[in-house]
Length: 174
Image 1 (cartoon, rainbow, N blue to C red):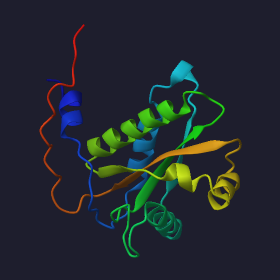
Image 2: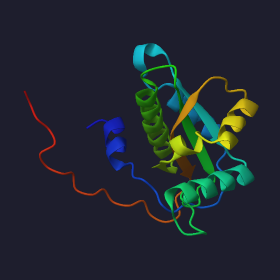
Image 3: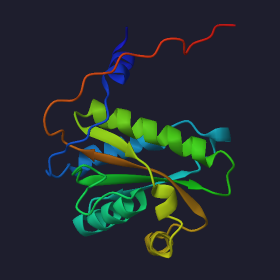
């Protein structure tokens, strides 16, 4: 088995991160890998908002917690210091699929750099609110965008979990 496939099989979702900052050089490499994800008709209809500012990160965490209905004090990003938010351009019919591929690339790239990651949902609901639409405008992101997901990234606090056994009966040959 080649190295790429082996690493794909080893990547796990992480639910406990150290608060240590991730060097920008590593984040740039991870983001670049995300931007190279396949996209429908090559339209590259996904964008990434890289959140490293703690105040904004904590605001997003709190809003996400409220949308998810969790108790006060719960961090849906499990302490990860970085949130890479993937958005899909609503004008492109394949943007949700394109953004999902970007998310996959981000998580695999983070793993390849020795970092942990996890896909956290509710970006769709967040970016339907005025606060987040205004944030995109302030960042210079024009047009209509849909939140696809948050890729929480950071150094793993502890050991990565072992893979659960794969379910049988999910492949059909024709």
